[in-house]
Image 1: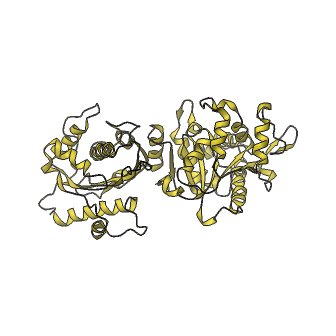
Image 2: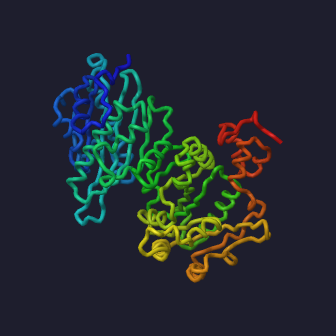
Image 3: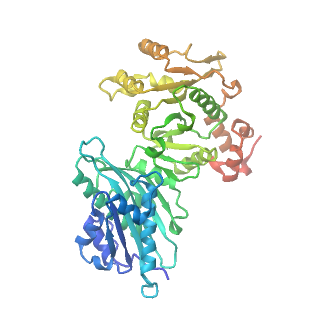
Length: 482
């Protein structure tokens, strides 16, 4: 029998932390454990203080000592304690204990949960602000399987005590959301910031799983984080599950390709293959330590003033089918993207781009918010170990192929461009396929939407089949025209 969690009075406005904890405590069916490592028992403290905790808290523990923690949860292969695998070990171990120690016959209506966090707060030197993993494993019906919500946060505050308090509020928001907002995952994600501000923390990854979240697309949850200003960059892998950028990019050589990929065409893949070949040929690049990113900016996803989620998922579906890691960012300017990558690696990086994007880099209007203007931006961009691979443009009127040798920039930018080019930072992609240069995504998209024939030949192998099979980008076989 399903247990109703909404029998008590619905409250439309945001509850304070104490009220959320009290509402959980007063629900006689919710019962579970708290395991917190690294920042005190900050979440469970809120439940103890709100009153009525005896009906909710089965156990609260904090295995601070590493050897003691390993004896309980086992050792991690990578030796790390602040990691997703450690968090999920904690969640599953504590849930197994509940199942072993409590009789279902005695507690037929109990909704078991295990909440856990493993974090590291700011260090004494204040050089590392800290981060952590937070999660909950829970039931919404005693006869159903368990659901899980796992997230990663980065602290922004510069005081350990404040970070601990922030973690406690976030934990209450997560537990409350799991039980009372589970039917609306987007609102659940938004609620993570209830009674908190963006100046306190950044949430850069969240994954939902379990029977109640079977139809949740975790890529959309990533987009929700980005749209609500909770982070500036999110990443997901070929399987559609969200990835932690810091983990994927740590100490890696990074090659990034920015585009609309609406849809991904032969041009995109020709640029990808050629830039990859050039990047891996660099002496400072280790093939085994290289991460390639297909990046889309948030502004590129915006249509008519708002983000079209269906369009976003169509693009994501195609890039995932090609086995690519995809990053969505809020970095319209390239130097901000490079700065972001530099938080995680000092290894060589590269950007692959077409002529139009390169011209934008030399357009002063994009740097009006910087006191040092375009010079400051270039300082930030090329202070790092960075290369730019330029894909040519075919001028159909003159039948000329535009590359770094004949590219025209604004007269005021000529010397800067010359310095940039002569410094070896700009590399032409020469081994390109000329037959691809007149393919434009917008043209292909229009052909698909209008049902015109011939668009299949403009896409990489297998992509047309995926579009037809999953009816992406408004495709309809009944609308095909000559």
